[in-house]
Length: 529
Image (tube, helix red, strand yellow):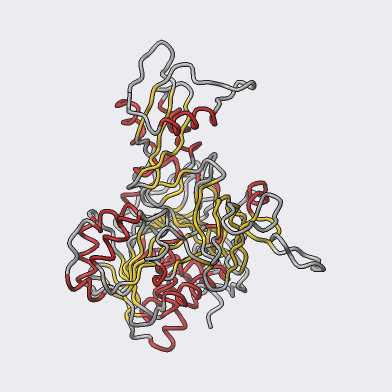
């Protein structure tokens, strides 16, 4: 059985190398072809001077080059850092600097808006462009290589000497305050996660899995690891319209499809081709609760398709799933622990909750991540000793304290209640209010700002900003949102801007955030003003 991430590809290549591993449009690679490509990229990283645990930022759309780059970094002993293509320069800059990325792999179009950013990334020494010409390097800037030059400059890498506890990836995810934080995942985390998912989804080499979610999203990346663990085929899709998903599912006779609630809401309203209804064996949902009417709509259209509702925790890669047989009886449940994990529901003091008593979800097992990159303070808040640990063990087991409040019914099924922090879950993404507020302040079109999430049937939560207008001026909503579009990706954009003078403050002069949020949530919503 594979122990290291890249071995998912090489083990299948050794046994069934002719099988199709990945396709993207007209490009198709067998497992043997993908293994060869991964090897060449690992040689390219060696030629670029990367050592063990060096960070490689991958800022690419879904493509075979992106997939091979992730696994090539793994083979070389490096750590890959997926960067969401929707991010703007300010978010990309934070990830590059925080991760200490030494190599950036991207496209000429994406790099066009990053020239000022790259000059301020002291660790970055090489930029690889997978398409078209590259600009001549600045005197003090990173070396620029096109894809062919990068591969041609490769050398045999030194033995990486890595084991399953070595880190292989850093996934950046937003918290309740400040910039996104990097979750460190090891080879063991990712291989154990793939094994678990394949077990409960019953994946086989006959599956054809459509990957529509970003690879910077751990749930999206899991479509790769699941496919390769099973020896299946993964089909990559960068889609514009929901109808494009159904067209691809029909064309490639897709058997597995993962999505988030906003996508399922739109797909549920479409007519599904008969070919898709026949081929689609299962679909999965995470990134927020799927409304029951949407579940019923999908069930009506897909009589023979298993629907899996799941709870994904980036800090543990995957946590719970609801068996499809339970969907009719408990459509609002997030299910039970995935194979290989244990989910606890505890009070603040760590003691177990009674049935139906709300408590914090704590995840223990092989999928628990290695903490937050370069952030021991936040790591100590989330990664703590497992409650109720065995007496006599000299070293306490580390578990993930999720910050999510759930309840467990008398039959052991879990139900999501809410969060005990201010993080916003929208469109399947976790968004930091502080990061949105920082962008609003940068426009210089507001005074004090308080950002929070409000319930939304389609998005899960919509982002609301309550802002003081600039001194002696009226609030300019259109101007503010226009500036925000330059600074924020679409999923971080405020859906509402509410202008209010004299926002309440506490005794320390800080905004009374809880008071502001509580007032608007009690009122239900507010209109743009």
